[in-house]
Image 1: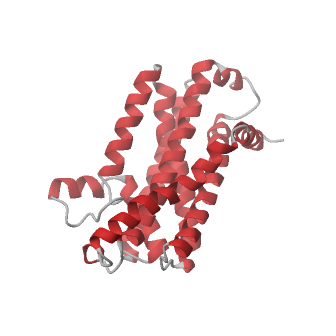
Image 2: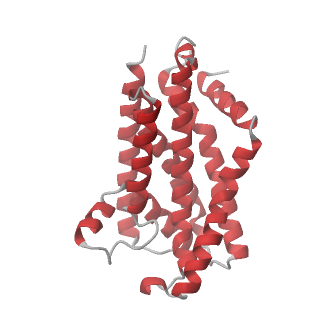
Image 3: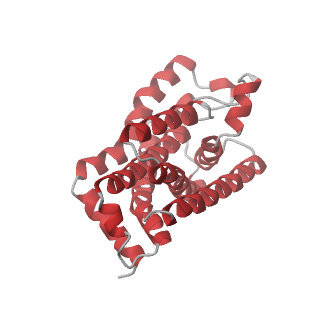
Length: 251
């Protein structure tokens, strides 16, 4: 068994001990879409912000982005707890490269995110009658996988650098609030005031959600979406090497 498969096996066994948690990861985005999306669609009508789509259609990509962001945050939290209780330092003595440790840590959770995305999109089409662009499914899966991994690497930097539990919780809570609401997750960017619009365009969640929105309902410019996808790949790569550097400094 290689170091990478060993880490994947460990994460799968850990998550399998709490099947309810996996069920929650898979189902809660659909529940969020049903409660929030349907209510807003009823209030705003079928042509949200002149985009030619209802709010449920528009918000589907936001829900998918929120889910991958949340799964990544929870995975980084488990990394922090491993370090906090000492298991992390024991694992550093195992014959596993630190790059394999990082990738293996997120791999199983990325698979959970992919299952969640497929379930959410399929049931959205059935229950909410969303006209999903099924030809965009490969792009959707790629965006979910890259998004979950990228956000995990981002959070892992802080999970490896911050020592105190309360400080880590504070940092992740601030990131959750800022990244989610200063983005295109809940509303289109163009009508926002200039300052908020600039912040949203500079936000990696906007890049990921715009790719997901193009993949699910075909909304957006292919050129813009391609640029945002490339920017997110660069962001994820930088975060991986920054997290790896922080991991290499752990003794």
